Length: 242
Image (cartoon, rainbow, N blue to C red):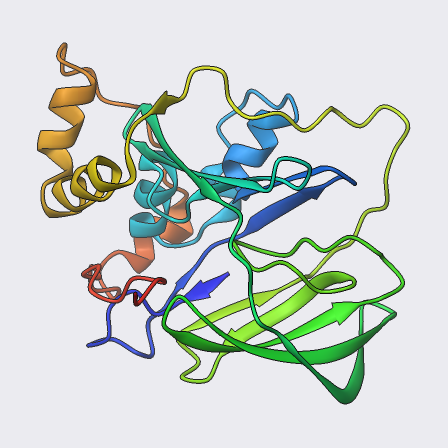
């Protein structure tokens, strides 16, 4: 996932490795670091995934991407964000996206994909879906096409998703379920909490962790070297424009 989070720095987007776990009835889209934990990995992996210390900090605090859980049977979508070590969630009906399927085709990871376009959450997207994998899931909240979405981007190139690896189901794959420790709040309170956290992450940490214990963050030598050349980004360009 590539996201220009700061419109004053269009050439310095946040690049977030993510993972989409898909079943016939449910899917989960999340930051790759947290997905590894979902799959049972218990080590600190951020320093192996991210090169920029700012991205490492964002990954640990959970602001790189929302966790999106989709239940196709119940037609429900749950958005979760980690404001430091507390997972807050909001639930909403699964959005219906009015896609227009185009004739253009191309291959992504040896999958024959077809183009589709739609306006969603204030952005106009072009998506590429693979009919040979007949699940209507996709990255983030993009869904509703007759095949999995392997790539998508908005017309301003501020948001893009690109599948770089595709692993087909395994017999012992974990069942897709949402986190049991999540705190469900209203959509209004969720957005208020998010804005407060973005404006003052330390205050959010104090609320989530009154003891004031900081999470451990390991920064690789390459990341430390890049710290002087990469300016901290402001979060002024949300993925959802409306």
